[in-house]
Length: 218
Image (cartoon, rainbow, N blue to C red; front, side, top):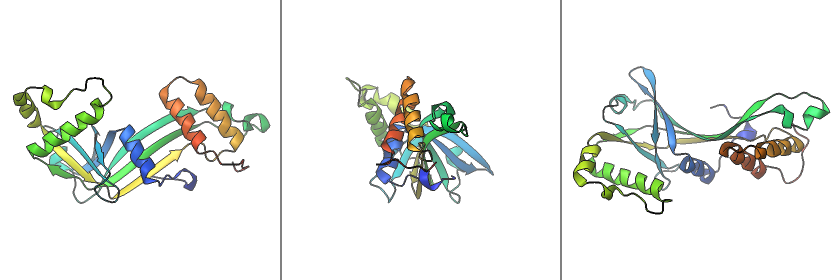
């Protein structure tokens, strides 16, 4: 991924936080001579390995688990908040008009070699954890044990586990850092007027990255 220095995010806790808040990863791997793309919810175990380990599962009928390369690293893309930025928000538009539209976004790329886990106990523990994470905010969380055990056994036989130890983690936070402070403040104000969650989150990201004192760097 091309990352200009001002947009690079290296803080592991920040990268992990985005993965956890946007857990539906786009998994890209090489299989049978071509790139194969799948979308799957992943659980991050930050305690395993220097950058953490991702755990997920795919349908047994999906051939990716048989053909995913163990010679070429896979990459999982986690897309955070994103928003179109109109140059009309920039103070510079009134000053000289030399402005163009852009797109702000936060994204994490996790690189690693996948391994397949075809083990019923591992899968049961995995889906139990995955369910616990995403049911935790419900007043009465649904539990795997709420379903008949024979039904769960049947469902477990229909999936295969995927584990990806993260060998490299890249983060790009494109949040108007290349603009002067008045332009950034204009973007924050414009995004704050929008009602969608992505725009609201991007406004907060820009505010968090404002310098302590104004800079003239554009």
